[in-house]
Amino acid sequence: MSDPGNSGDALARLAAVIESRLPARGGDPDKSYVARLLHKGPDAFLKKVGEEATEVVMAAKDADHGGDRAKIVGEVADLWFHTMIALAHYGLKPADVIVELERREGTSGIEEKALRKALAREGGGH
Image (cartoon, rainbow, N blue to C red):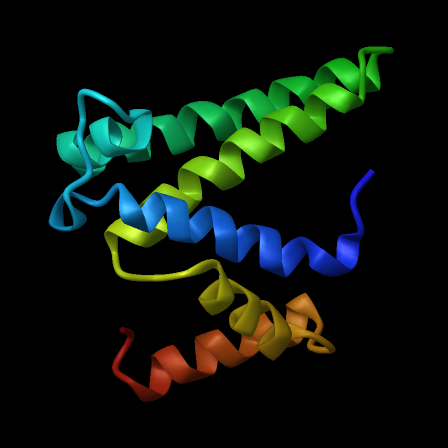
């Protein structure tokens, strides 16, 4: 198993490969699965995100009934991969998600939800 301390580096390396497949960077849909999804546009890769999220749920449900827990890891990897394609399309990086997770660190979900509601009220419901 790899060192979890390098996980950010692994995500950054994968993000760089995905970004290199963007149509604006010359990604060739005939040679790359990622480039093909990006070339097809958001409907293609967002459909994959939905499919992979469902597969995570199914793998977890199977694990609850004696199935292989390692399948959850594989399905989450597929989900993360496809969400990284979405991030790249929208000009975002995994580091942006990490920053948001760090911002939330130490804030309970109840407090976070209350803060969002208060901000929405102040902003006229947006």
